[in-house]
Image (cartoon, rainbow, N blue to C red):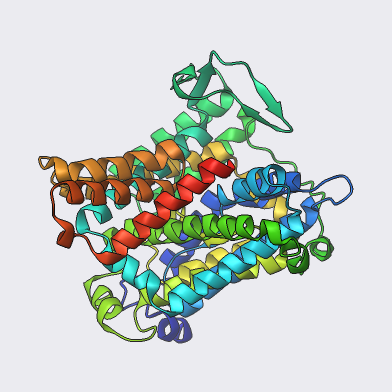
Length: 473
């Protein structure tokens, strides 16, 4: 125990091993879905002649998550977990591979380069400069926006929402495009499906436990909902697993740099694609740290002072940024898309996780899945979805600190917070906020109120969107 105390400073952070264990398990449950979802998405990037092994991706996902999360816990001593990111894996498959015609080996090479870029901009303090440049109102909006985003993920995973469209369905492999704009109308389901009923029961259980201030309310709710789901036929108790640890040989160290840069005519496209990967990865992470770290006290005022005034990697934020930066390249070497800090870490933080021991426990649970992977699959999405909705509620407090009476401040803050869930992307919400913040200041002639880094990043966002539109990225 003294070893853990000395390493993670548990008493200093007002926590203990039990609390960190519960937090680690809670975080794991809320993000374990990636073990099964990632192979299904990335597996589509291959072809019949050059398949991207789902078994290899499965093992790579687990190992990448475990290694990256261990680095976060042991190096930065913060309760954040990492794994291949949703959204980034879809970009890898549907845009880079299917849309632009790159092989999965070439796409992995792009991801690796993206990781190197992330390391460079972290070591050279660029990420730190970006965080320092973000105005306080946008930081509050990012926190609230992530809360809305997490809650929206919960609503979707719970099966509470249905989407109807007047547009014809366009089928593409296992995924369907149902239209856009006014053609797609969201609404609540009628709760006739057992999955939605179970999620509603789970939400009620966690809500009551939270109101009664029961310790471990979220984890208790997840476990209770999973058990209730067995007689309802929602919880899958099958322990079958078609993948094996040896499958990693199909994806590890398969990066194709030669093929990626073989055609001079495509080098510009390669660089633009890497930029798109990097921007999304960088701002997803920054948004997660700002949105969850400030409110929870993970990154307190003392740490913030060390971040901006100190040299080297002295603050927890510095170390966390570096841990995140290394994750992407590690994941690419193993055979998966960008590995990044998970916003679901907020679930573990909300139940008391405050140190890297939370991350260590989460990493251990991932490693256990190499042998007992089906056990993680027993907990259905309907059991973890209510937890995400509750966490989203807890994160809404920061929106109350925004001066909504000042339209100049309200406009970028609103677009930041609302765009995140609607675009299903943290970095897109940040981009919307940046662009309209700079626009509002320029229109008012307040050029000096905008940090030069804000101008630079905003221009990068705009260039990225223009190029993406022209090239249909």
